[in-house]
Length: 250
Length: 318
Image (tube, rainbow over all chains, first blue to last red; front, side, top):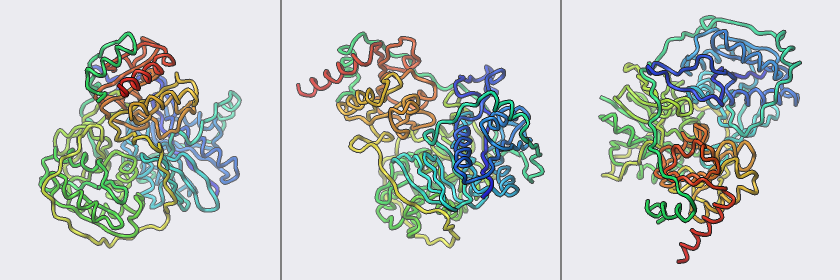
């Protein structure tokens, strides 16, 4: 096993509040700070740790998107990835299209493992990893909070609604990351400089035999419905009285 | 002329309430057929429970040893086979459905609409994006099967009705051997389950430590509530990730939600906005949590919460 592949997405930074454009045609993202999707950053960290423990020799980053997304690939290279691939495509592709492109890359790169975030924090679909695993006809272990590899088998603990579930999957496989898997490292300045000379290949979506046609049309963006403002109480006695008045303490 | 297939969520013995919520959502399509698929090892009781959900026209039970655990790699090819002849395939936006439905959709060659919170027509749906900062209207291609997950906090489960017929089905589908179930560990212990609890008490970063978080746990116990946490509290290592409430954690809709020392980042608020009554205790009067709280108390939580615990205990013994 040589290669571990990580799929990443460029999104508006997690800490920035994004608003709907006044005309409802989309989100107002111009000029906002852009970052690697935080779950994908965790995926990069997971891949780097597996490389550092000697399980893989190369970490390859992949993103499907426009030229601006190369900033995020460079950040990932500065974290320690060896090389990067950008599949040139418009932003806002549907997850199935992204999964098809990643599948095309998987057939070229033959990675032993592909790690991605469990969801992107912009459109919150949470589909790409599962779709990729289906197209590739390989196992999936989603929402991973622990990941260990022994030989050709990965043992993955998943965060599920009922608690934790552990799966054992044969490699190659697809793993999607949850928050608790790791704490991504900080990038040091010398690494940023070094990353500038690391290889970054650009290929076209069509070279992978993938079309960017959409199955869904997004008609309208609206702000979320607001909750009516409530009351302020001055102390605990008033708080208990307010809860009793609402009948929620029965 | 919609024909909807809903995939049932269950724990091997009981039907999960998520299924009744998916049925409620599917009924908004005014479907001609509403079929619940139960994939289980055994599963006769589960199928009987599904058959009694009001609005369900048929239950299909696929009883096979390989369906003992809900493995997406095993279930998805079976769902693909079952979906033939349907216009819609729905499942819950729980970790079960989130894991399974996209895999089934890709096998079927179609995309998916995640977290449906409203059905406008058989091919128009609303869903949240950007951690709940926006709600979009999505239109699906009427020529294709629509695969969707249902945002559970947006729907009440349907009531019981006259039992629908149950058909046992054997599927001739090749299944992979590359994925194996090892174990499942329940979280929470004695407390109610966070996803379904009527009352939830959550703590934030202001608790300061895992030790400090015990105060929130004590309040939860006095109220008979489930315990939750903000992402900040999880990131700080006070509690396990499975207690995280918010867009990237659990989206809940309890009768009572008490937020202690939680400032109210949008991604947290998205996870609680369907709660009936939200109570916030925070020492920062400008905290965004107060914009959504029905009852807000500006106070030092380390003084207010013990006082509240005392008041609730006194009330109980009165």
